[in-house]
Amino acid sequence: MKVAIELPSAQATQLESEAKRLGVSVEDLARAAVTDLLAAPDPAFQAATKRILAQNLELYRRLA
Image (cartoon, rainbow, N blue to C red; front, side, top):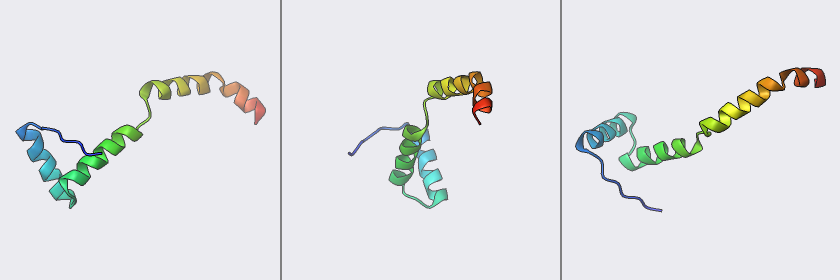
């Protein structure tokens, strides 16, 4: 899928500078940023998981 976005001048300049610093194309840097965003776990899911693990910690200890 191809996606076209319009960035404010300051953001475009910052993206270009960061891509140059990293030695990658602007497109590759943008793709990597989107990939990282989509791969990040949902904060609500993480919070629920931590809460459930904490609630069941004693049970897990007994079963171990």
